[in-house]
Length: 373
Image 1 (cartoon, rainbow, N blue to C red):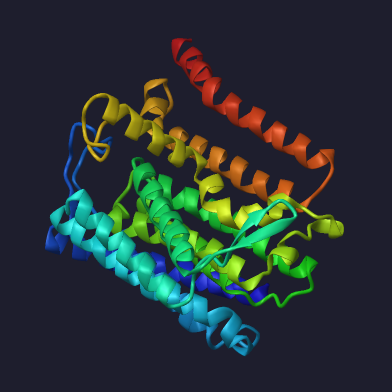
Image 2: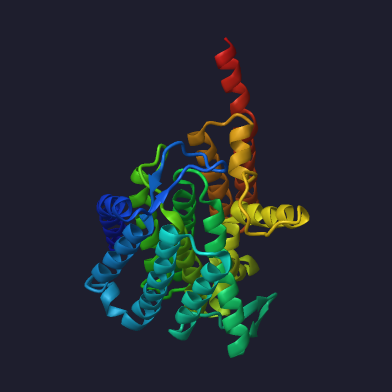
């Protein structure tokens, strides 16, 4: 655990330091978010949070290769981690080009697929799909399709939710911490080696996301841009895929106390969807809304969930914090329910849901009453 904390700290510190350099580079090369009708920022803001986070991830990886415990498990840790870093660098480059020149949707999609295929070629892919008390082995073509769909879908979902200062980075940080907890506890419960690529990647990812937040939280001095949103979505998806390759389905079924849990088998497959449930729902609603209006599903608008939170009376900061709460509810709730048995986990999840709903609907009314008095 201590070495994972070192990885987390290195990613956080390096990302934080590189962000200032990246911000100046963005201003130098004109990678600046202009103010548009659908945006909520009032002044032009530089991009390039992605290169800073990529630097943090790379630094964390390099440090991990020299740590006593992690370095003894080369095959189990660094093969997948290295593949994800390479693929992440590629998708970050695609995002940088988009931040500079605004790529069309098809070109961006092609870059996402290419980065996903690189990771698959380097060995990070689904090997099976879970069935109840069983699993379905995948052939090469099926494995590639399922892996690419999950990675591209997650990268685009994070990109969609990146509409408020600090929103995407904070939500992915929460998801990374939740999945790190799942992977580490699962290794302990099953007596497996605690040096696993998924834990290394999620520890570094959480550090990189938190390292960029001082620059990116409202009022943001820089945006992570497509280079950052696609990168962190990519790494989160690849982390969950890597875990399924390092744990057999029978091991994933062993929850706390040895109880079989089908949800534990499903979680690596659906983790990006559960952590990013809100943006995935937002993505689906956006596609439906735009196609029904006869527009391209990629055409922008100002009707995302975070825009509506602002409309019902939340401040910018509180809208972001509410989205964080929703992400934490789903992410940690999924981990608890999949690993622990009994009514206590369900009661705790329900209590968190009530608190989150109250924050969404009650806080704006209290604010209005305060201002009225």
